[in-house]
Length: 393
Image (tube, rainbow, N blue to C red):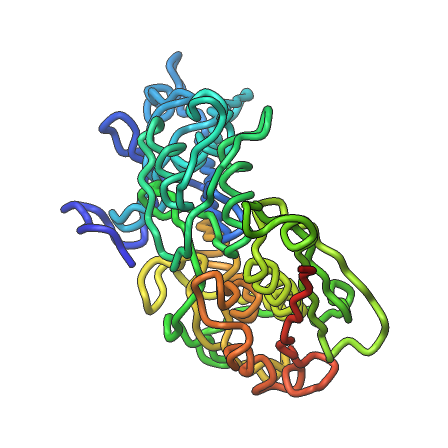
């Protein structure tokens, strides 16, 4: 989705940097990257000019007033692409030329870098949902929170671990519900569940400039086990809350390869089952990856963004199925204006059933075995397991 309307006078296809009310253009190289695995998008802008004589050099560069820490917005055709701050300003010159490289990140960088302790009174919050934790931590930085996930339940206690950043704390409490933490073009924090579809159709021979794929099995396991502890009370105590456990199997992995996960937060039986199912289905989904390069930064659904779900049809990659954007890099240089999309099956990013998204046990992952030689091959087919709950009474 494109935010707002482009201001009058912007030229289509031109990248601009807005700093202190001034627009800077004429970039030689531009790169903007985002991922559902990273909270803050990043950008790099490069420009160079030949000396034109005189003592002052090129006025267009020498007159720039851009400093590290300045608020800024990268725009494409007048639309916001990334809103944040300048991290580094690197001028360089020699006898013949003058160059400037500028790097920065989204507003959410302050959550990545800042410690959580100062903004959490007594180091803990009680009876709070993930959205409340996020608003508490993001508010002091002027970062908005957009909930694009079906959040379930609240945490009895959310505690700050000594020395951890706000991002690290949020990630701990987002992980049980498989909520992804990323940003949007306006610098807001997105609490994301990958869902839906139809955002794009990438078709070999039509709109794909370049593509590659990797099919692998080294990150999959035959048996999954999640362990954790729940909070006890007068009715529930002992091993029932101290030894919560769930197990799942991936039938597509023929060798014995066990994998145990320790849940970091309060773990109910349902939490354990959901985490276990998610570990199995997401790792199965991640066994198929594709990188696809397309023209422009704008797709059928607007600005290309991580989390969008569409279809990839490429016989040469042996893929014909639904895929989701895990990460992307948008570039503009002598090769044109391009976007490289890193794609994975949606189940690699979707939450478990109890986490608020489509249930991992209700057939949602069935599409993982549909279409394409790789997907239909039993060695690559994602088998959605049913987790067995183990809890002593």
